[in-house]
Length: 100
Picture 1 (cartoon, rainbow, N blue to C red):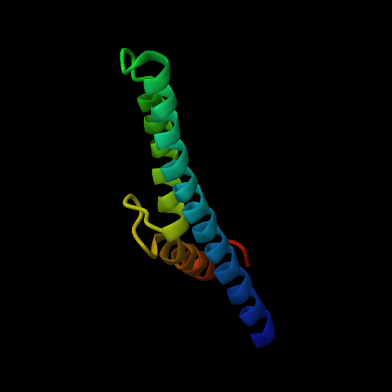
Picture 2 (tube, helix red, strand yellow):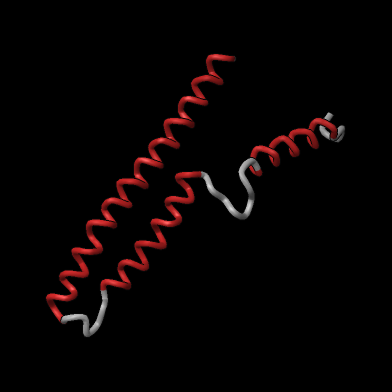
């Protein structure tokens, strides 16, 4: 049982590290591609229409959500909300005698 718990912790930690790694790769890609698109935008129409800002905005929103997921920040439910709710429902089921 203890070994299984340790494996679960390892896999959860590995998944979290993978999410953080993907976020940083996406961030670096964003920081390289957006200036390139700005350069193309300037070269093609000299800022008459700054279309690269739409790309930067859309991609930036996605990047924000990816960062929130990667670092586990959830402003709506708090840090341990999910775990507290699971324990609460388990206690309710334990105290509920209808199932016996």
